[in-house]
Length: 438
Image: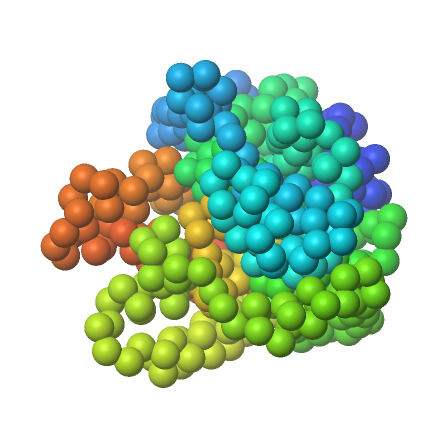
């Protein structure tokens, strides 16, 4: 039995992510890991009537609101008056790639001199190497190309994460997938990601594909290793693979990271030594309100020494998250496990700008499930609505001072903590939902 969007044999990303027919739901037939999805009961695969295809008015209303927000947000970013679609972060990557091509340091003045907004390049040199092809394009073609790549990868992630819900639309699955993508586009982490030209969505896609596609066309773990070499935060998935019984895959991820990093040392040895000796310990403006990590929240909350509290909090979150994710994996709920680890990565990273919080996408998908549990649908909609409302910006720009302003400015990080606890407690699988709602 095939599961999810592949049931209709219309999965548009099979050629990209590998053999998606491996996303099967019979854990008793799979002695090892990973388990692509939780099991689906026969009752959950039966056709639903038109009135049951979307079982609650709240789900319908929430979807319409989020879709409208996504469309309006896209139009606003593309409007020439708004001038928001500048992809200034992609410009930093392109400038770093240009520095590599011309023999300059990616951490020197050559990068800032090429930019309208003189931002520094603070990532591993391997990221600059991957950006060099974009230096062959002009600014507008590069922006269009990167946006297209990002949207395609986002659609692939949405098709995997929301498959239990999209599947219920039957032959209208492609339409449902497009609507889900538009709804996700309304989330402020996605909007910020697209208008800045960031890399968080491709990195999330690497982790989701490596964990969720059962028979990939690449060595499992390789994508996580590449993602870690670009930005170190995805490294949290390596111990998760190891602890969930996929030690070979964890080794592949670590070896791939090492190989990519070695390439950086060979091509730009000076910058590579500079990054791993000093740059890695120099985060930029961690106290600024758009940093929603534990470090950002604690620095804004504690006027005195905060680092000790931060270290304790990081250890607690990592241990708690890994235990919960491994338990979810052993229970056959790989999507919940991936969402948990993604949230852990957001919280423990010293810097987690709002556009890094794209990991709420799989978290919302887990909560909504098949859409049959109205309570979970309501929770999912409230979470999504909070990320549409741009609460930290409202607290900083409108409320400005006082407890309410502080609460709003820290709201996305606090919501991620709440989501981590909620997902760690365990949710009913779609199969159980289907049995209980019929």
